[in-house]
Length: 285
Length: 265
Image 1 (cartoon, chains in turn cyan, brown):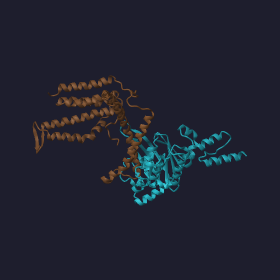
Image 2 (cartoon, chains in turn cyan, green):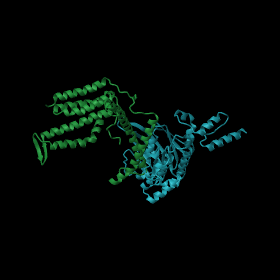
Image 3 (cartoon, chains in turn cyan, blue):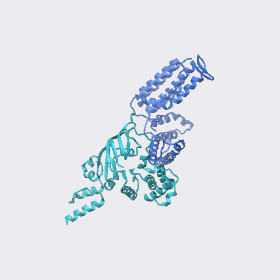
Image 4 (cartoon, one colour):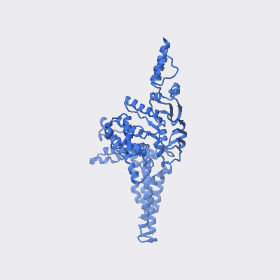
């Protein structure tokens, strides 16, 4: 499902002294099946933007097209269920949305709301319990008896079990241990490779460099860049101007290039970095 | 959710904002008491003018105050209508069984209506211009005399401050969980009464559990920093009287005097 924003603005608490413009004339188009990273500093409007994908917030101005559905300021809350079936959101710290008696019931909750029978939903739930790396034994436990990391996985499974065309995640790996983070990211890329669109809000530039096809950069409610990671990380001065970090691989290459090494492009993954260093060493010989 | 005005503070910058919460609390309670002194059209006129000036002094948009009255308008109207139908005396205009519309009834209904609106306006002035935490501080200061009869004023004030402090947090949390469950296909606005009630379970359970977790965390954090209730704590926000507070109290004392002078014997 292609997603297009046309001059979208959003104002929090309009017509009050507390009014804040948190999205300001944002326009972009996202390709189907891409892995999209959404980056920017705290308060730049990333989370607000994300809630527009699911029409949880409606634009104050402008128009959003998601698949064949149009969302305008006049859109009401009725009849949005099909959209929410196609587009799913994982909020920050999603473990706070758990409520069922057992883990498996909680994961099956979403699929059941979207029209699956209890049996089908439970099958789906078991499938996703396994996919997020939880043992079958926890299925019948209360989600509140699990550790924080396990609760996070249950919550993510609960959203992914709806199997949306577009999956949006707001810093899903924050607070997980490094191996857990890696596992989660792998899960999302696998999901994308199966033909779904994944939109990831993150502060981790290594993840952006490694996984993203497309990067949206937000600043103070404005979309200031929409680019591939390759081009984004090439412009180091621009990154510094906007106080954005570079991926570790890029920094590593930068250090080396002061010492006789030459890099024709910013290495985005560890593999690329290794290949380029290898090429450099061979040249020296 | 954000439409609830009671207890909502709006940032602003007028003399009312500069007044001490203790003074504002005293003035508000005083007003609620002395409004019962008014019993004829002169006194109601004076009281209405004084409330109007207080409202204007905040320099906030009048619509904000209308928003404060709106949720209670049916209650006010119902009370006024009851007064209208069940007060007898004076000239009778209309009668049907026990229902009477008399001149006394009309006047009384009008007075009740005005009294309600004025009380709401004045308390809205207080809550709009005073941060909830300031109100809690003010309450604590005013309750201090009760310490002599062993009332744990410090603890009561702490409980109040914490409760007030967490109202916005809970609101945000509620909205967040509602959105998260909406994204999982919950419809809070569709279906029959039973379905709607059921839809609130996925909202209420996480909300309770999160509140308990937050409360436990807060208690642990306070204990690990050695918090003890009443032991002569110094405070971060110190309350200070200023000339604005003399103006404030003087204004309401003047109103009291005028009401006593002009009320019908």
